[in-house]
Structure formats: structure tokens, C-alpha cells
Length: 237
Image 1: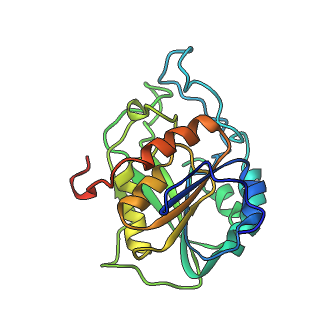
Image 2: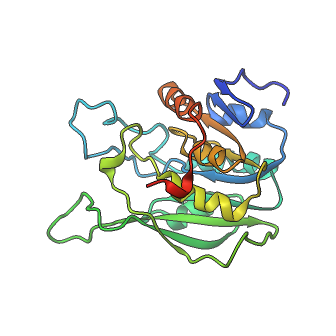
């Protein structure tokens, strides 16, 4: 991987790069077995569940549009091996636009059902949006590990469980995708790493992972999470 910046963190299983993925991805040389990422949604998200002075009440870099995702698409396609899977989280309001920004066709739109947790917005004349989309793509064809999964993924969650990042996802949700689409020791790439949930889930399942994140505070959190002992996901809440 010539020309790569020095890793922010590396432990033989997980590698974290602090930087702009548009600059880091061209230096990677391929061999990726899965792309799993939660990119900017193109909605200009700012959490409304915190006090105005809380550290998480700040815009997410690049979230004002889907241009960044479209820009890195060719590199993601180059890096992902043939007959592999990719999963991209998307806003329920931007499924079509996110699909167009991806370099691969979307085979299924999965629904992450967050359970009965409430949501912000119009509390009297609007539905509570308790789901997000996960766009499942294939590059070539690869069969799943285990039985055919269903498209609704129920992992209860709410914004009150986001102590480290405004749009953090639950580890068991990402682990379920990793388990059915990769084998032990295979390599997972997350170019929009955030606080490192993809990397944590990959490490717990005996996979390798590369994460890239623009904001250093999230790199630090991810490094701390990944330096902990491997967790037993069977017992995870």
C-alpha cells in the first residue's frame, strides 16, 4: 500500500487512517472483501437530542450532499474484489439519490427497524420515523453464509444511546451483516468510519478491517474501542 499515510492506529486486525477518504483510498491497493459504511446522508444532520452546548451538537462533515459518496465510488469499486458484497446506510428520505451515488447496482433495500424508540419531528401530525435504509449491493455474485436472511433488520436503538457519535449504529446490527457476507480473516473497508463500530464488529468476529475518518476525535474513540478485548457478541445487548 504505497503512499499511505501513517496509520492512526493499527493492531494487526484493525487499521485506522485519520484523513479525507478521497485522499486515502487512492493509495489502497485492493483485496477488500466487503464494504460496510455509514456515509454522509445528504440531509445536513444535526442531532436534536442534546443540549446546544453538547459536543455532539455539531454538523457532520460533508452531510449537506451525497457528492462525496459519488466521488469516492470509483475507488471503492476498484478496491472491492469480484463476487463480494457492499452495504451502505442511507436516510429513509434519500434512498433513490443514494442508490444513484453508488458504483454498484442495489440488489435489495434493507430496513433497519429501530424498535419502539421515538423520533423527533412533528409529534402530533407526523409519523415517527423509526427506521433507516441499508442498501445491499453485489459486485458479481456471492451466496450468503447461513439461511436466506429477511430484509427487515430489527435492532432496537434510539438517539439516547449515542454517547460518542451523533449517528452511531449498534454493533450487533453491523455484526449480523458481516457474518452473513464474509468469512473469518477477510477484509472489510469502512471509508466513513465515524466512531469505529464497523471495525469493532469486524474484530469481534475475527475479520480484518480498515477504517478512514476525517475527524480526529472519532479516530481516538475508535482506537480506544478497538484496543479493548474481543467481545462475545452472542452476549451483547
